[in-house]
Image (cartoon, rainbow, N blue to C red; front, side, top):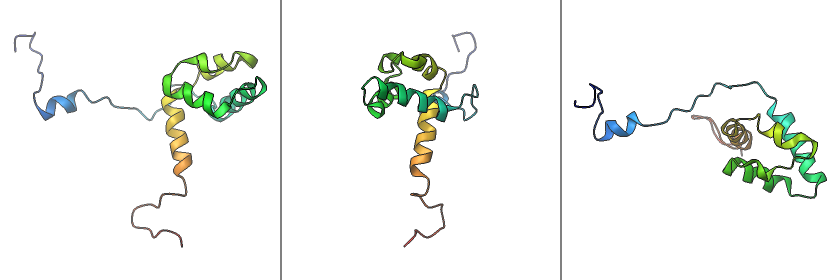
Length: 106
């Protein structure tokens, strides 16, 4: 240990040691649904495709995809994109994925 006594695992343990843990705890309570509604409407009012623009923002993290109209750009920056994506996935899958041990409808 020539680096100050710091243990650095090798092999598969090294990969696990570097795995980034995503916390499910919200950093700030911002009503994502309301913010997305305002952003959606602002984009629509300016003639943009709101779904495409919001998706591009969430993928890239670049607020340039969101208009400044109605303060939408500042509002969307208050959201944690990771939490928004998690909520969108949860909402999308709700009802379409059966819990383990249950029978699919039909």
